Image: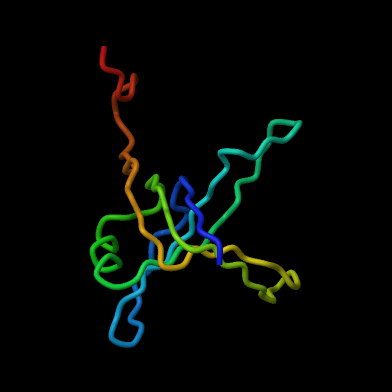
Length: 116
């Protein structure tokens, strides 16, 4: 297996599920940092991330859709069959997650969070 590190935004609220005697937290992360296209419209690469054990329990209450995270783990490509036919998915297993920035609530201030 290959190791990977990505930085991107969480695309859906994480789901915490029981897995035997442990817990698993799963969520999707979009990474579009290094994708360049001619017309300026870049589609990000989506990854399904899994975090296990105590880390999963701790992160379940912190992470939410829109949070920017750095993810480190093992890259696994899997095949699936969906409504639109066959496809491939990129998963990050046994991930370690670091929060880069939390999703901020919209501000009533016309200038956002400008310091001056």
